Image: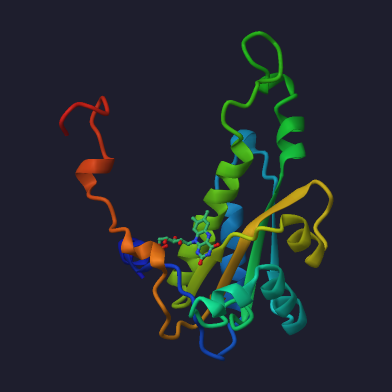
Amino acid sequence: MDFSQVLARRRMVRNYTDQSVADDALDRIASSALRAPSAGNSQAIGVVVVTDTQVRHHIARVADEEGYVKAGFDPWISGAPAHIVISVSETVYRDRYSEPDKLGPDGQVIEWPIPYWWIDAGAALMAVLLTAVDEGLAAGFLGVHSVPDLANTIRLPDDHTPIGVVTIGHPAPDRRSGSLDRPRKTKGSVIHRDHWDDDG
Ligand SMILES: Cc1cc2nc3c(=O)[nH]c(=O)nc-3n(C[C@H](O)[C@H](O)[C@H](O)COP(=O)(O)O)c2cc1C
Protein backbone atom coordinates (compact mmCIF):
# COMPACT_ATOMS: atom_id res chain seq x y z
CA MET A 1 0.00 0.00 0.00
CA ASP A 2 1.18 3.54 -0.78
CA PHE A 3 2.50 5.33 2.30
CA SER A 4 0.06 8.21 1.79
CA GLN A 5 -2.81 5.69 1.66
CA VAL A 6 -1.63 4.00 4.85
CA LEU A 7 -1.48 7.34 6.61
CA ALA A 8 -4.89 8.43 5.33
CA ARG A 9 -6.55 5.12 6.23
CA ARG A 10 -5.26 4.96 9.77
CA ARG A 11 -7.96 5.51 12.33
CA MET A 12 -8.69 4.01 15.70
CA VAL A 13 -10.99 1.05 15.05
CA ARG A 14 -13.07 -0.13 18.00
CA ASN A 15 -14.56 -3.39 16.73
CA TYR A 16 -13.11 -6.48 15.04
CA THR A 17 -14.34 -9.64 13.34
CA ASP A 18 -13.66 -13.08 14.86
CA GLN A 19 -10.96 -13.76 12.28
CA SER A 20 -7.53 -14.27 13.83
CA VAL A 21 -4.46 -12.35 12.72
CA ALA A 22 -1.77 -14.31 10.89
CA ASP A 23 1.38 -14.78 12.98
CA ASP A 24 3.68 -13.42 10.29
CA ALA A 25 1.61 -10.23 9.98
CA LEU A 26 1.64 -9.84 13.74
CA ASP A 27 5.39 -10.31 13.75
CA ARG A 28 5.87 -7.61 11.09
CA ILE A 29 3.61 -5.24 13.03
CA ALA A 30 5.45 -5.82 16.32
CA SER A 31 8.85 -5.61 14.62
CA SER A 32 8.05 -2.19 13.15
CA ALA A 33 8.48 -0.78 16.66
CA LEU A 34 12.20 -1.57 16.36
CA ARG A 35 12.43 0.85 13.42
CA ALA A 36 11.29 3.79 15.54
CA PRO A 37 13.84 6.45 16.49
CA SER A 38 15.06 6.70 20.07
CA ALA A 39 16.91 9.46 21.86
CA GLY A 40 20.59 8.63 22.21
CA ASN A 41 19.68 5.39 20.45
CA SER A 42 18.56 4.26 23.91
CA GLN A 43 16.27 1.61 22.42
CA ALA A 44 14.44 1.20 25.69
CA ILE A 45 11.04 0.08 24.53
CA GLY A 46 9.51 -3.34 25.04
CA VAL A 47 6.76 -4.92 22.96
CA VAL A 48 4.45 -7.59 24.34
CA VAL A 49 2.26 -9.31 21.76
CA VAL A 50 -0.78 -10.88 23.38
CA THR A 51 -2.98 -13.43 21.63
CA ASP A 52 -3.82 -15.70 24.57
CA THR A 53 -7.56 -15.43 25.20
CA GLN A 54 -7.26 -15.34 28.98
CA VAL A 55 -4.63 -12.62 28.95
CA ARG A 56 -6.63 -10.53 26.46
CA HIS A 57 -9.70 -10.84 28.66
CA HIS A 58 -7.65 -9.89 31.70
CA ILE A 59 -6.36 -6.80 29.85
CA ALA A 60 -9.93 -5.95 28.85
CA ARG A 61 -10.96 -6.03 32.52
CA VAL A 62 -8.03 -3.89 33.61
CA ALA A 63 -8.83 -1.45 30.80
CA ASP A 64 -12.46 -1.21 31.93
CA GLU A 65 -14.00 -2.62 28.79
CA GLU A 66 -17.23 -2.74 30.76
CA GLY A 67 -17.24 1.04 30.78
CA TYR A 68 -16.90 1.15 26.99
CA VAL A 69 -19.73 -1.35 26.57
CA LYS A 70 -21.94 0.66 28.93
CA ALA A 71 -21.18 3.68 26.76
CA GLY A 72 -22.45 1.81 23.68
CA PHE A 73 -19.17 0.53 22.21
CA ASP A 74 -18.57 -3.07 21.20
CA PRO A 75 -16.38 -5.21 23.49
CA TRP A 76 -13.50 -4.21 21.27
CA ILE A 77 -10.68 -4.98 23.69
CA SER A 78 -11.46 -8.62 24.50
CA GLY A 79 -12.83 -8.95 20.95
CA ALA A 80 -9.56 -7.97 19.29
CA PRO A 81 -7.68 -11.16 18.37
CA ALA A 82 -4.37 -9.54 19.26
CA HIS A 83 -3.04 -6.85 21.56
CA ILE A 84 0.32 -5.17 21.46
CA VAL A 85 1.50 -3.43 24.60
CA ILE A 86 4.39 -1.02 24.16
CA SER A 87 6.38 -0.27 27.28
CA VAL A 88 9.40 1.89 27.97
CA SER A 89 12.15 2.05 30.58
CA GLU A 90 12.95 5.53 31.88
CA THR A 91 15.91 3.97 33.71
CA VAL A 92 17.62 3.05 30.46
CA TYR A 93 17.39 6.69 29.26
CA ARG A 94 18.78 7.99 32.54
CA ASP A 95 21.67 5.53 32.30
CA ARG A 96 22.33 6.34 28.65
CA TYR A 97 22.26 10.09 29.31
CA SER A 98 24.81 9.63 32.11
CA GLU A 99 27.33 8.51 29.50
CA PRO A 100 30.00 11.09 28.56
CA ASP A 101 28.67 11.90 25.08
CA LYS A 102 25.25 12.73 26.48
CA LEU A 103 26.13 15.02 29.37
CA GLY A 104 25.06 18.68 29.09
CA PRO A 105 27.47 21.54 28.29
CA ASP A 106 28.13 21.88 32.06
CA GLY A 107 29.24 18.24 32.27
CA GLN A 108 26.13 17.30 34.23
CA VAL A 109 23.27 15.00 33.37
CA ILE A 110 20.59 16.99 31.50
CA GLU A 111 17.46 17.92 33.42
CA TRP A 112 15.07 16.40 30.90
CA PRO A 113 13.03 19.42 29.80
CA ILE A 114 11.24 16.88 27.60
CA PRO A 115 11.04 13.24 28.81
CA TYR A 116 12.31 11.53 25.67
CA TRP A 117 11.08 8.09 26.76
CA TRP A 118 7.45 9.08 26.16
CA ILE A 119 8.28 10.58 22.77
CA ASP A 120 10.04 7.41 21.68
CA ALA A 121 7.26 5.16 22.92
CA GLY A 122 4.82 7.32 20.92
CA ALA A 123 6.98 6.98 17.81
CA ALA A 124 7.00 3.19 18.25
CA LEU A 125 3.23 3.29 18.72
CA MET A 126 2.76 5.13 15.42
CA ALA A 127 4.98 2.61 13.62
CA VAL A 128 2.80 -0.21 14.97
CA LEU A 129 -0.48 1.52 14.06
CA LEU A 130 0.66 2.28 10.51
CA THR A 131 2.11 -1.18 9.92
CA ALA A 132 -1.20 -2.73 11.00
CA VAL A 133 -2.94 -0.68 8.30
CA ASP A 134 -0.25 -1.64 5.78
CA GLU A 135 -1.01 -5.29 6.57
CA GLY A 136 -4.66 -4.71 5.63
CA LEU A 137 -5.68 -4.85 9.29
CA ALA A 138 -7.07 -2.32 11.71
CA ALA A 139 -5.82 -1.10 15.06
CA GLY A 140 -6.98 0.93 18.02
CA PHE A 141 -5.20 2.39 21.00
CA LEU A 142 -6.39 2.88 24.52
CA GLY A 143 -4.85 4.36 27.58
CA VAL A 144 -5.18 2.25 30.71
CA HIS A 145 -5.79 4.15 33.93
CA SER A 146 -4.39 1.46 36.18
CA VAL A 147 -0.88 1.26 34.79
CA PRO A 148 0.45 -1.12 37.52
CA ASP A 149 -2.41 -3.56 36.88
CA LEU A 150 -1.59 -3.64 33.17
CA ALA A 151 2.12 -4.04 33.90
CA ASN A 152 1.38 -6.94 36.29
CA THR A 153 -0.98 -8.63 33.87
CA ILE A 154 1.74 -9.01 31.27
CA ARG A 155 4.54 -9.34 33.86
CA LEU A 156 6.67 -6.39 32.73
CA PRO A 157 10.04 -5.92 34.41
CA ASP A 158 9.99 -3.34 37.26
CA ASP A 159 11.64 -0.58 35.24
CA HIS A 160 9.15 -0.77 32.37
CA THR A 161 5.98 1.33 32.12
CA PRO A 162 3.29 0.34 29.61
CA ILE A 163 1.94 3.31 27.62
CA GLY A 164 -1.35 1.60 26.77
CA VAL A 165 -2.77 -1.16 24.62
CA VAL A 166 -2.93 -1.46 20.84
CA THR A 167 -5.81 -3.64 19.69
CA ILE A 168 -5.35 -5.35 16.33
CA GLY A 169 -7.69 -7.30 14.11
CA HIS A 170 -9.79 -7.34 10.98
CA PRO A 171 -12.09 -4.33 11.07
CA ALA A 172 -15.81 -4.67 11.76
CA PRO A 173 -18.31 -1.79 11.69
CA ASP A 174 -17.75 0.22 14.84
CA ARG A 175 -19.25 3.03 16.84
CA ARG A 176 -17.46 6.32 16.30
CA SER A 177 -15.81 7.89 19.31
CA GLY A 178 -17.41 11.01 20.74
CA SER A 179 -13.98 12.61 20.38
CA LEU A 180 -14.53 12.62 16.62
CA ASP A 181 -17.15 15.33 17.07
CA ARG A 182 -14.06 17.49 17.22
CA PRO A 183 -13.33 18.13 13.55
CA ARG A 184 -9.79 17.63 12.29
CA LYS A 185 -8.06 20.98 12.33
CA THR A 186 -7.27 22.77 9.11
CA LYS A 187 -3.69 22.97 7.86
CA GLY A 188 -3.72 26.71 8.27
CA SER A 189 -4.50 26.51 11.97
CA VAL A 190 -1.77 23.96 12.72
CA ILE A 191 1.11 24.62 10.33
CA HIS A 192 3.02 27.87 10.60
CA ARG A 193 5.93 29.30 8.66
CA ASP A 194 8.94 30.77 10.42
CA HIS A 195 6.90 32.09 13.34
CA TRP A 196 3.59 30.91 14.73
CA ASP A 197 2.02 34.30 14.07
CA ASP A 198 3.39 34.82 10.53
CA ASP A 199 0.90 34.09 7.75
CA GLY A 200 1.83 30.85 5.93
C1 LIG B 1 -2.30 8.91 23.71
C2 LIG B 1 -3.65 8.46 23.21
C3 LIG B 1 -4.55 7.92 24.11
C4 LIG B 1 -5.80 7.47 23.67
N1 LIG B 1 -6.62 6.85 24.56
C5 LIG B 1 -7.77 6.32 24.11
C6 LIG B 1 -8.59 5.56 25.00
O1 LIG B 1 -8.25 5.35 26.18
N2 LIG B 1 -9.73 5.03 24.52
C7 LIG B 1 -10.11 5.21 23.21
O2 LIG B 1 -11.16 4.69 22.83
N3 LIG B 1 -9.37 5.92 22.35
C8 LIG B 1 -8.20 6.47 22.76
N4 LIG B 1 -7.39 7.17 21.89
C9 LIG B 1 -7.83 7.36 20.47
C10 LIG B 1 -8.28 8.80 20.18
O3 LIG B 1 -9.57 9.01 20.73
C11 LIG B 1 -8.27 9.01 18.68
O4 LIG B 1 -6.94 8.86 18.20
C12 LIG B 1 -8.78 10.38 18.27
O5 LIG B 1 -10.15 10.53 18.62
C13 LIG B 1 -8.64 10.62 16.77
O6 LIG B 1 -9.30 9.58 16.06
P1 LIG B 1 -8.51 8.67 14.99
O7 LIG B 1 -7.24 8.20 15.64
O8 LIG B 1 -9.47 7.55 14.69
O9 LIG B 1 -8.20 9.54 13.81
C14 LIG B 1 -6.15 7.62 22.30
C15 LIG B 1 -5.24 8.18 21.41
C16 LIG B 1 -4.00 8.57 21.85
C17 LIG B 1 -3.02 9.12 20.83
